[in-house]
Length: 350
Ligand SMILES: [Zn+2]
Image 1 (tube, rainbow, N blue to C red):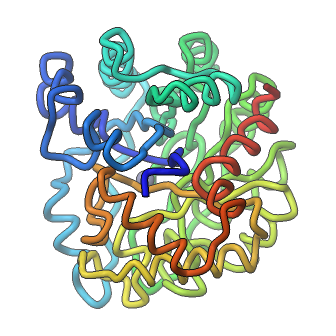
Image 2 (image 1 turned 180 degrees about the horizontal axis):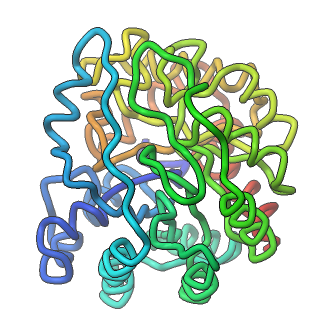
């Protein structure tokens, strides 16, 4: 099953292209690459696009981190904070890859829900310029103004390591997300300015105190682009029932993260996860949020995911499992893209 097309809350393909050689390597998105997303895999699996994250890497080793998370319990130390002067050139370099892909006709950088609808209807990959971790934004928010003009439409105040705006959750299992203080004064100003501009605030990676600060200070729907249900997998990165209630109340949504460690009840980053475990989270999220507030946030190219959905080409398996599970056509369309479009339209105003 290749339809309904899936619009997705999170992928890290740009980081991988950056680390593999930047502009020189971005061609592999069109010609084929080893990772989870490229043009051929997107077409084969009905991957319509989504949030393309720009993330400034820390020196920590990805493989070591993933290995540590295969243990029955873990508490990974967070990498050191990165200042905006160090982060900004990297954000520019990674954003340049996104625009290069657009220049080559691989995708379209969308600025509104209407733009996304047009791209999806044409079978063109719809990309949202998203920054995961606001390190590149200066305390005066000047860089936010300029990045918005360049097409930025979504930002996470933190990717787990601390920023001048707030504190993230460490990768800890088992644990609830109530670790550390909330948003700083800079963080509250960031939220308010993003609301005014029409830049979505992503609460995935925020700790509980930061989440509640966003809930207090933002007038927009609360959105977690790639997080799961703490009631099924008690990981610090997952959302508690109280948080889900606040997301519902704000008419926001949650994108289901495919990362094995946030799906499995035992919190291990190991890929032998049956698709039924993903359906358990979807059912749980629907029970708490309603059918209009759940979508996908794969974390493709950023995590170890279940074998059955190893790459974007395998999204056909996920749809099949959903239909077998009893989801009707209307619900399938909502989960696959319509809920994202609804919430983005509400957040951005068009
Ligand atoms: Zn993430």
